[in-house]
Length: 299
Ligand SMILES: [Mg+2]
View 1 (cartoon, rainbow, N blue to C red):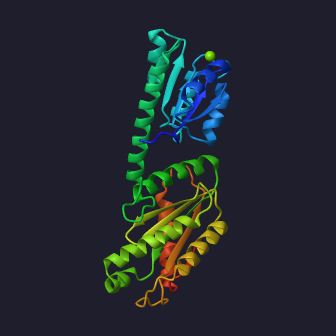
View 2 (cartoon, protein in one colour):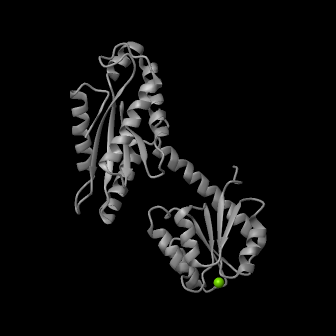
View 3 (cartoon, rainbow, N blue to C red):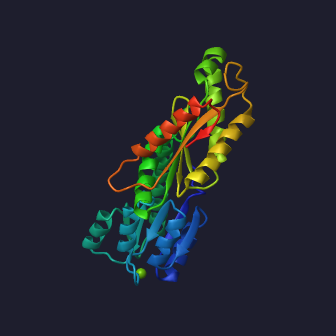
């Protein structure tokens, strides 16, 4: 397994310690170092490492606190943490492991053992990433699947509720896809689905925007912090980009090529409500788009 791209974050308030570890690991992995707990949290907010080697005794925010905060956050909870510390009481180790760290190394350490443990943890991390990816991807189109969409929408619904910000959703359907399959065959149908999925996935630019296969010939986009007007703009981009593919469809009653219909809905979630509300609203608007002649956006 290639681990060269693995990112390891070293956290220790004593620079000599991070320097020593860096020297030990830098030929095998991408290494970054920070020298206090606050910087560690700040770093991980913008970029997720594959492993954190974390000192415990540090001024202000100590290693336990850093671990606790990372494990409490949905985004960073799966980042493996190894405590590396001069605290060598069993109680300290127990506390660290109970907070969710996968390992506990005491100083002074044996260099070879540290290198071997880091390697083992990174292999496990990579394998778990791979499984997570497989379970989140649609087998045919390789974009996110329904399961991944449900999780993403739930999280963003909660986030939008807390921050009192609009969340938009676009539900999309390939026009006359049954006729496409009937006339061109299922292999061509699969190929059409792949092309549409790739086009939609390439049309989003913000890292928080999300596209998934919703089922059959239906696709969905989740757009956090997005007003209704901005969602309409993106929906139009989706629609036009599918037209630009010019996938021949002589059996469509709309155009001579494949088109999509889109329903857009935007809400600021209220307390104790479910994201199903947003999906239903988008679905009603998708229905309107179809009723009005397809190949168009409705909200
Ligand atoms: Mg320290």
